[in-house]
Image 1 (tube, rainbow over the protein chains, first blue to last red):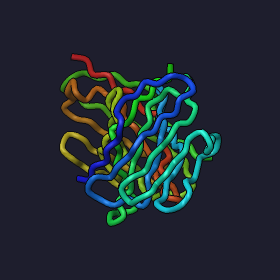
Image 2 (cartoon, chains in turn orange, blue; image 1 turned 180 degrees about the vertical axis):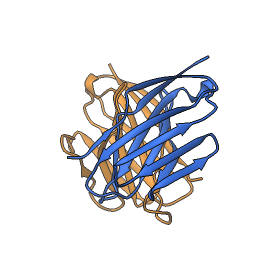
Image 3 (cartoon, rainbow over the protein chains, first blue to last red; image 1 turned 135 degrees about the horizontal axis):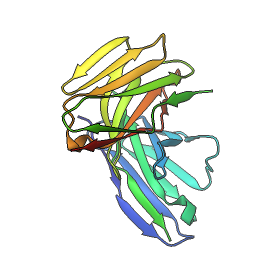
Image 4 (cartoon, rainbow over the protein chains, first blue to last red; image 1 turned 30 degrees about the horizontal axis):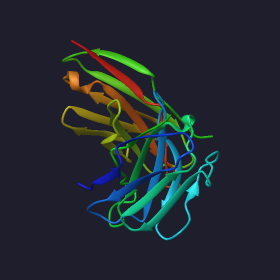
Length: 117
Length: 109
């Protein structure tokens, strides 16, 4: 099956620093990648939809200047949390849609646990 | 607005059967998904229903009634490792997934 990787799996940083999270589709091309955030005991919340070669589409309430998304290639999307604060501590999960697959197929990365001190 | 409802928590006994219900109201429908999520991990795909009826896959089955906006996930022969959250998600007319809050399933010996 299709594999999506995320790096790093876990990161701890100081308040005010920036953190970059990478999402890669390892064996397929993904024109569309999705970034989710999940707080403890809550469901996934879609933050933004990332399309290769174009600007990301952000969900209401998500600051695009704080959560920078770059989808530079068909296999890589990055999410940068700028000037992170403790309230940004969360589980960040990406998913990717296979270019050559069914439109309803979405494959999830293993997630990145961000802790901001 | 769009809404997905599922119970917050359920408890079942090892070896038994449990049914997790999901009702939805969305703008358009392009299929309903069930995912399993263990604590601290990303969701893993369990099933996809786009037509009415029952889809069986091993110990897990998923049912859909589009006219009722209703689905259920049926887990048979429960094992301790089935303790997890089960997420119901509907793909809307824009092919975006709308997520339920998840049902935490607790399996007791």
